[in-house]
Structure formats: structure tokens, C-alpha cells
Image (cartoon, rainbow, N blue to C red):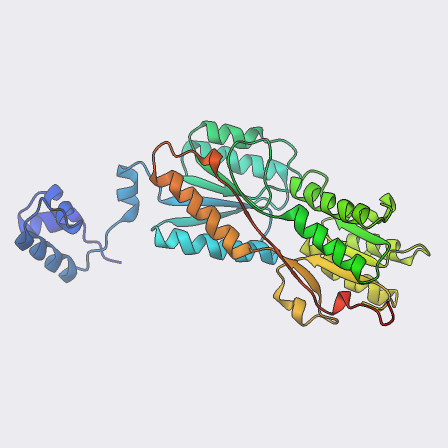
Length: 341
């Protein structure tokens, strides 16, 4: 790495530091001849500009934070790619912070941002988050905040989501149309509004189809595969077991397949399965999985674009920005209609 600084360039050329700085920025205040001399010497001495020094002078870190509950879920990996595609174009760095589904960790991370470590924040809240005071305090400190996917409804901030109620309704309706009459809904958090909307769509689809809502089939799962395997196995080994399952989150897909295999319940003949997931391996599972796929890359990209509007325009009102991008139901073998149904 070059140790050449603007001061060294200025001394070599007998110019002021300010003039060299303006020449490097192609300022109209500097003559073409002087610019050429400065650029030639900068190239000769391998001068590399320091973006952090410039950021400090402008009271900008040129960094945004992305606060996520996890990265094991393929949705968040794709969303990060969408965010990066915008941030790189804007010349910004992206710092990824993981809460590991812990509210305490999320609160501690948000408190750090009050001191000015980052210029703006993109956040998808943890499944333990049942209060939003820590986020409201960061917004009050002047930091722009944009929610994506998992949001806090009571916070006045930009929100980039998908059509969770509608997509869950369509998934449930699809199972009904393919012969299911006892459909289970599996979820992992009582706090997330995203889950409330998906459950609302599930219940509405059952009611519209004239089917009874069985509370025993609405099952709260855990954060680990082993625990979820036991919960799902216990659900499926009962005589009055469901004939269809909707998994609210990707992490429930594996324990569903494992439990069905353990109990020798053939998918889709004995039970049909749909999962909310962006997992590319859904195509090669045995049998291939019917999925509700969220537009993860688009959501990440859109969230970043909205955040940069606030960073680039003074007094930009983020509260106005509520954007819903539709998910897609992709039908595969796990919901194949039985012959004769």
C-alpha cells in the first residue's frame, strides 16, 4: 500500500494541499495544466486516496449497517446481495450485524449506532423482538432506518415487505384444492407481525373454503432442528394427523422431511407440504418442494435504494415509504394432487 499523501504531492509540486485536493477531485477551480501535473505525479508515486479521511471531514462514515436475525436462511443471503449491489454503486461499505434471534443482542447493536458508527441502518428484527423503543431511539438520534421483511408495525419508518397474508392464503387454498382438509400451520415466533399476517391468510383461506380451524394444528416450533423434529413427529404420529402442512419459515423444512421419513409418511400421498423458502435445493429434494418464494434480492435492493434516498436528500420523509413486493407460489411434487381426488 502506498504511503504517499496529499501533503507529499503538494510539497513536490510546490502547491497548497487544498489545490492538490481540488485537482484530484477535478474541480473547475483548478486549471487543466495543474490537474494534469497533479494526476501525473499521483500516478508516478502510486497515490491512493483515503476514503475514510474524506468521510470524516464530511462527518460521514460511508458505511451502512444491516442488522439480521441470521444468515443461514437463504432469504437473508439473497437480500444481502441485493443490498450490496446498491451500496457498492454508491461507494458505501456494508457492515453485517447478526442478532442470532436475540432481542438483547439486537438492542445492544442498535445502541452502538447512536454514536455515529454508521450513516444508516437496514434491519429485519429478531423473533424475540416484542418492543421497539430501541429502534425509535436510534431514529430520534437522526439515523435513517429502513425495515425489510420483518418489521415493527408501530414504528414510523420505511418498510419493505412482501404480501405475506395473500401468499399464505394462496398456499392454503392450493392445498385445499388438492384435496387437503386438515392443514397444519407451523411457525416459530409469537412476536413477529410477519407471522401474524401469514397466519391470518391461512385462517381466512380455511374459513373461505368452509373448513374448521383446528387450533391443535397451529403449532409453535423452536429454533433448532432436533427440537422441531420431535414437535413435528408428535404432530404427525397422532391418529388425527394433518394431511397438509404449511411451514412459515425455511428452517422447518428439514425437520418436516425427517419426521415424515421417520414415520414412513409418503409425501405427497399421505401428507402434502408447502414451505416459505428461497432454498434453491427445493428443486432437488425428494420429492421436490412446493414453495412460497419471497423476492429476497429485490427486497434487499429496494430497501437499500430507499435508505440512500434519505442519505442523499436532506429532510427526506422515510415514513412515506411502504413498499410491498409480491411473493411467488411455485408448485412442485410435494403438493401433487392424489389420483381420483
